[in-house]
Each structure stands twice: as structure tokens, then as C-alpha cells.
Length: 258
Ligand SMILES: [Mn+2]
Image (cartoon, rainbow, N blue to C red; front, side, top):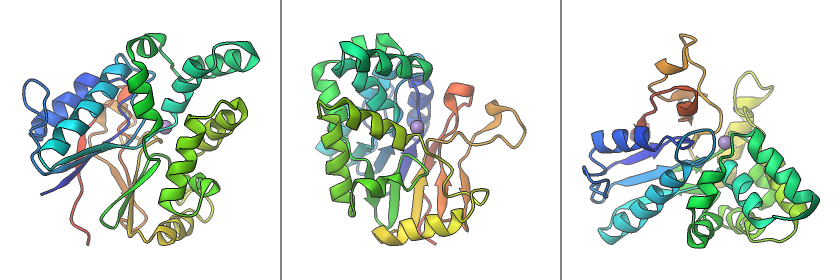
């Protein structure tokens, strides 16, 4: 049995369906065929690309179907979901305008919001921000901002979910701002590798998988990104294939822990 990671889809439903089918995790009709295998969707389902609502629906549906056969298809929340949900929640006044403007600037697509039910939105609001798969941590952003929300994974997940259920626009705005940080684990960021290590140590993780920061194509052409970037002595794995920039995307099968 294996664990597979799906990077930032940004509405590119067809691409992720193709990769899931190639990995035999879904069948031709798009239903779960992954038996007891595990799949994680890394967040940023929506915005920038053609069918964010479709990606959210697929992730939800696979979660239920996998669960029923003892498999697992789960998701964590990215920063684009809060941007979209803020627009749905705050529809009047000065904050409404600010959230709408922010969402538009980040590729928000009103059609996605129109296509989602209240139930879909509630599902998103309940998503964890962090998860563990064995000793591997699954996070959306390559950032330590999560620690501002709590000490343990459980506390952080409840605190983030509490913001997504809150009627205080300032809390939403702060979450979106926090969530916009990136590249904190890279060598090019001063102390990056040490920061990544201490972040993992804090949670008892040996390895970390993230999305959020599109992989830099070695050829300069985003269409050539077909695999994750593994860095910091193989402890950090970036799975954001930049599908919205033209990347074909991929589904990454986690290797055994070295
Ligand atoms: Mn992101």
C-alpha cells in the first residue's frame, strides 16, 4: 500500500483526473479505485484554473468512497479556499469589497462559488490545515506560520477551522495574510533548512510535503515540471507542479522513509 499526494490543482480537474486514473486510484467514471491506498490533496483546489468547484467535489466524493472500502482520500486546506469562503461569508460592507478584490487579484472565479453548495463550503471549513501520514507531515504552505495558531496539530487545526467559522472579518484577513507567506524552508531563505528541521521536530515529523510555491522549472518552461522538488537532504518535498501556469501536473507516490 502506498500514499499519493496531489499538488495544488487550481481548478485543473482534467489534469488531476488523468493522473489519478493513470495511478489506478480512480476508474474511468471517476470513482475511487484505490482500495486501501492513501491519497492526500494538498489544498488550493480553486482559483486561476477552469473548474475549482469540480476539484472540490471530486476530493469530497473520493473521501467518502475511499473511506467506505478502508482506503483514505483526504484533503488539507490551502490559502485559496479561505479567500473564496470569505467572499461567500461577507457580502456587504467594506470588508466584502476588500475580500472580493483580494480574491479577484488571486484568480478567484465567481462560477466556482456559484457551483458550491452550503454543504461543500462547510466541508472546506472543516478541513485540517496540517496532517501526519506516518512520520511525514502534510502541509499546504512552506511556512511556519501555522505555529501562530497553536502548538499541536490538533490545536492548530481547530484554530484554523474556528477562523473559517468566524464572523470576524479581521480574523479572516489575518489568516489570509499569514497564509500568504512562503519559501521559509529553502536554502535561499536565511536559516531555511534549520527552520524546516525545527518545524518538523516540533511535530515529531521526519519529512514534510508541501505545495503552495510553484516549482521552478529547471528548463525555464513551466510545461516541463513533471515531478516534485526534493530538497533539504530529502526531508522537504514540494509538490506544487504549477498546473495553472501550464504544468501537466503529477500525482506523487511517497517513497518509503529512508
Ligand atoms: Mn497556496
